[in-house]
Length: 199
Image (cartoon, rainbow, N blue to C red):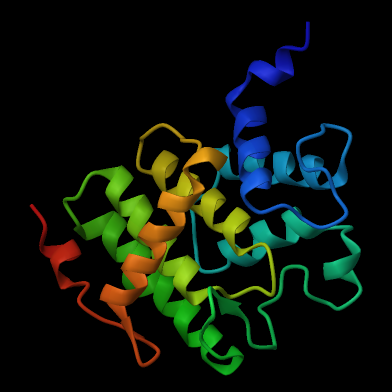
């Protein structure tokens, strides 16, 4: 009997890699490099000897993409993208905006939400995740990185980690798009005050 297949960690990695597969890799197979990288990144995220900070996204992305030629051959592993990317036909923020947006992602949104908002941890983790996905700072691997950050926020706030399932991917995508429409305009996040005022 393979006990690995019954663990939260295995389920998380398989489902996350099914949502965002890496071409040329079977992220559902424990012998596959993308699976192993994702498992290592998850173990890093779930460890309690560190707290999320301004470089967390870069650190997670580096672990996730280590040894994957698409990233390694173009110096994209653990670095913000230097080209435009699109989600559903919509252009994500231009590369020159990423350092400031990611600084704000941490200092003005995630950290502030975790310390000042009275929303439950799950809502805070989802808001932080959606902000990250709207920024889309990497050439690829944004979804996998974002779902790991989501769980780091959850566990750091004392809640349990969660799996976002492949079968729920369309509602998952829709929530991100709705968040973008309501809270991102002209390369700026807007209408976030209510999240901090929530009681």
